[in-house]
Length: 215
Image (cartoon, rainbow, N blue to C red; front, side, top):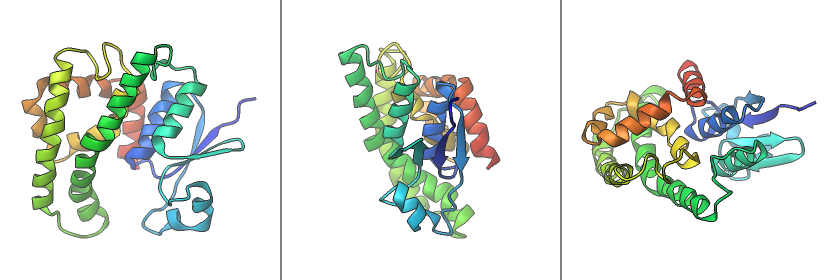
């Protein structure tokens, strides 16, 4: 009998959602264990035993405990024999890794600040959005989107003419972008907009985005 794996963290977290998309891609059964961040549960001893830096998600599969969403995502895709890592080709796998790194250092870096200011500060902290920070990070986001637009003029997806984790990994943060006051930035990047729209129609992504919205 296959036991469910367990994911620790709030589904609204983009890193948690990234892992859930991968679990949905391989059809894995999973249990989502909520971690209440405002109460500091992620810094408590139980969670620190799973995730030593006090971040979400943490992940359990039997005796195996993992942290870091990209590592968890890769593990699940390998376990589920998914082709989203393209590991049958050294060159394609390396290209997937390169665009995953590009996402982390460019797209996500800018979007994390935008998401924090647009959603977390007013909705969960009772504060006022700092539009100066949003404007600054939006300029950095535009640089990443410009690179993506050029790439997508030559290939169907970021790593080539095949969908991969490098694409799907963007979905949780792109979901927040589409819901933010900055969504219109995509109008200047039609290929990027079409790429995002296409991924949002994928069943695994649809299901997880619905969970994010319902939480």
